[in-house]
Image (cartoon, rainbow, N blue to C red):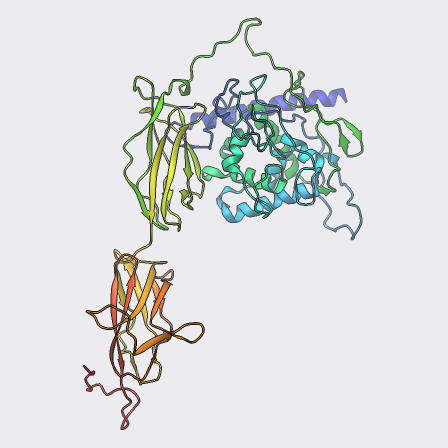
Length: 570
């Protein structure tokens, strides 16, 4: 056993070294002034925990405590293809560590499926969620969850009071963590409240975003890992995503090892019977080990109380005095020449938001993380559907937000720019979404529209709308039978439409063109009044078309259609 354990440590050290080289290469390829993850994690150096962060820790978990147990040396066996008989208890196959509680496993797989539809280019494997869930909470404490996926008791990390961890003062009034003084990581995926506020998702469809629910937490983690158009099938993107969850190189190596382990095979076990880790990152002994089992399927987790502070590295007895970071020197953000933000519903904004970070003396500050957040009642978002994006300022101190995509909801909303990790004056940008419009409206047919008194028109009116030569889809349309070209009031005789109850209607509202800019109006009828009538069709944006309708008695000597030589009545 001692020999095996020695090999495990050597293997872990080798894995750490390989990962360090990979992350270093990744960092060398990145530069400021481009979108990064939502907290700006780009490199291993940038990902080191900040012991005195006063506003934002820069990761999903706040670099809180995590379990450090390594996977077993033996590979897990895949579960058998045959399903257990009804009412029987599933039997664990292979190592107990390969078993994942049923509800927790279901949450991971449902999150993966959701991301395949929402962000197919991310290529998120559910085994990555399982690896993070193992490291963060021991798979929700071995699957101690209710039928709907909510943890039986809250899972809380230590309070982030600067005592061995980052200093993150309360951001949620204790709503999620019950602590109104400092924040704590919450739930099976260990989100800090300030991150859950924008990253939270409703994974079980109950209308609530609950970090203590494994379905909600797994879906939130999946979207968090897939933001910024990361393709997790690429190792560099995978590393960046994991580091954004907890900014530790050891954490990266550990999650990758569990990911590889779960990819080799897992099986489902009953809720509440999973093994629990026995070592955590805040242990005085940092040795990685296998879990210590106290009874079948169970181990004793470390204490959940606040840990003793870890002594800072450096010369013993000599307090370290870190040099000010670029973020520390920022006095405020200012607008960097952003044009008026306006777009039609469904279109991309042609303008981008530019924000500049400056010192008190007005000097530009590079390498500062600026977070752009879409706020207000809107369905507009940045490219990829995210409402939060973080960008590092370039050498001129400027951060340019990703392109905005207008939703279907019209009206104003705000994009707020703030500095990550520092409470300074930010900038609010007003953006407006206008309704879809058309500037041209034409009939798709030139067939004359005729009808006999008391009858119905043989052809329905169909029109096509365009805007600046392009198809104008989803444009609002109104159709009214008017008295004349010069008198747009609604006519009280002649042609008419019918409502759902068969009653006469001469004005139709709430109409909309389809994806091809087309709109076919309902069937037209006529009363006994003969003559020439006008149907006026108008669109949002002012496009107007007058359509002539003729009501005349049938020619008794020929076909039902009016004679081509007949002149319309005055």
